[in-house]
Length: 321
Image 1: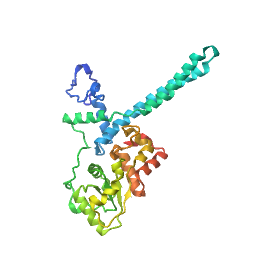
Image 2: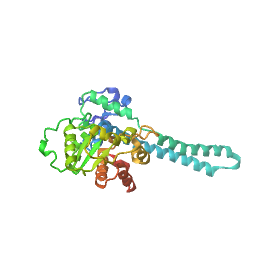
Image 3: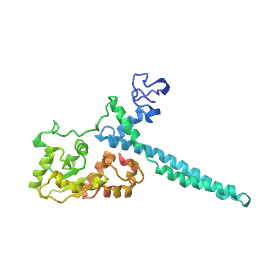
């Protein structure tokens, strides 16, 4: 275990306290992750302490790392299977057909069956969730991690008359309260000149302002953003009932749908099962999320359409974060 404080390589048999006094929280043998790797994932999720992020985004950073590591296994298995198959194919002789045919079959089984099995594998998300909970239970902070909505009241640095000085050009309604915090605390509302509120009407001081704005400007575009779940896909059915927007019935749905996730390969590391394409929106790293969402707002495209266009342009899955 490498100490995050002094860099000393602490052997497990010498206990969970480094010679410098640092107390290790995670046991690599039990938790399957070390303190150093955990903190590296935190830096990844926050883009080196640049962004606020959610627990889902920290879990997603872990999944991406695990999938990237597993890809090396795919290459090894494929090479072994290919070599065995080639040797068998060119070595077949009438007098030893059975042996070589068996070797050929074994090689093909490793090549295709082994590769398929590795690709079917999914990261153990519960392992990372447990590590996060253990870290927090020890009283250790995770800078910029958002655990609960905290914008029920305007932040102290916001003067009420100045909240809207950036000029509102659109309204963004998100499915979950915490997604409001994620976008607002990272300044997305100001850079995109939009008011952000959840479908529950959180935060109330923003929701009331939306009602006023729509009376003044009934043509103001309203965008929806939701998870790739059955509940998320039905978000548009709940808006009028929950927010009671005045005389405004047209919404532009930017959210993810199950069919989108099924199609977009970049989202697959976040899936808990091969046949389940439900995914929370904040499993997408903030950098990728805000980049895709900005383009979606500018061009009035769905987030999925933007991700498709990025994939077609050669963007790599490593840009997730």
